Image (cartoon, rainbow, N blue to C red):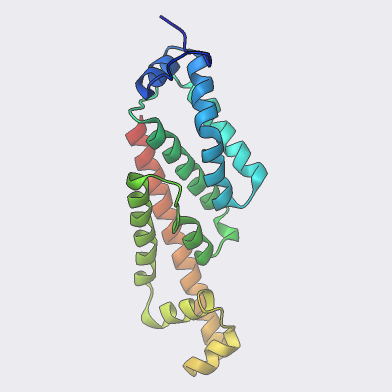
Length: 200
């Protein structure tokens, strides 16, 4: 088999790169790495706002790509690699969920402009599922949650606007926050499990 190298006259096709990768061709792996690393890093960095964490995340993806090259199922490099970035980012956010508000979740998921059409559709679906988490709240708790997290009103301001005691507002806010956090964890864990099963 001819090894793929950076000096090949004709740029190898995606199929050649995938086949070369599975056969342990380091030249194919190098081409894939150089072609996709920066774009993948840009997506991760934009969402995580942490350069070191984004770099580590992308390196981990490529390390697994090489180690698992003989068993992975790839039909499209773009879809496979950016899906990996997407779910690694989700996993990072899920792991830090206690430090993230709902608004931060929404911001992270709402504008993956770097992804192709298929991935963008998947993220829009995810955002819709997160929005549905608000529907599980009682009307008053939902309104208080939105006023606090989206309009950034303080507890005292909400109490005056809704003619409630500050203690009552704090009760609804605590209850709503806990409910949304549990919902988000369940949704993200389910999505990750389904994705892993699909890619195996």
